[in-house]
Amino acid sequence: MPKRILLLLTLALIAAGCGSDEDQDAVQDAATAVTDTASAAETLEDAVTEAEDALEGAEITLDLDEQNGSGITGTATLSPTSEGQVEVEIELDGSEGGPHPAHIHKGSCADLDPNPAFPLEDVVDGRSKTTVDVDAADLTVDEYAINVHESPENIDNYVACGDIRNQ
Image (tube, rainbow, N blue to C red; front, side, top):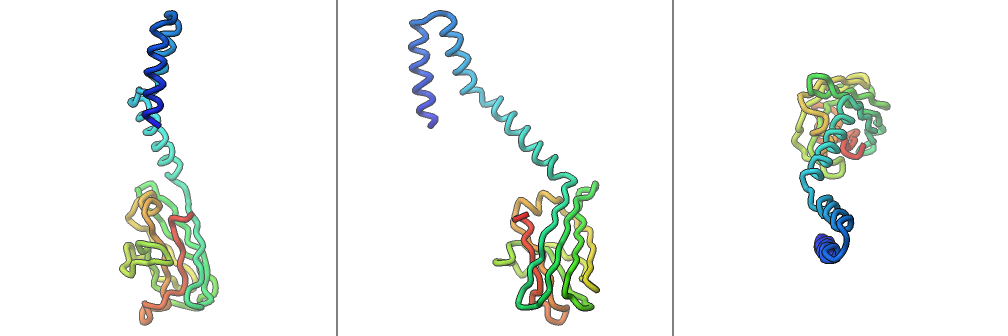
């Protein structure tokens, strides 16, 4: 594609050499627009800034799907704080008592890193609330999932999980 543009610009410059001053000005303007990478970089930077601003303060709610026939489902809400952290609130349905350990793990529910990236407060009586020292954008750029475990004694049995990135 870039070769085509250069070929077209070259042909236009040759043709403009035979034309009027207006033709030459139009060709020069077109060449400047195509080769002005500084302007393109500024436009890209503006778009990135707008996307970051849109994420700032945006709340993410994800479904926690049942795992291993547990009968437990729920939601997790991630809310960015003004201090650059994320407040994670978990609400489970079908969970009796607890505690159910919960973590943010790298990976997805289908391919979870077993080592927690960020610990969360245990879910007790279906609820948990934790402030995590991580920027919300970091949790959406890479793959992360919120995973809830059966109990501290049976930590290897997952009862609910939700992918953060797919939201």
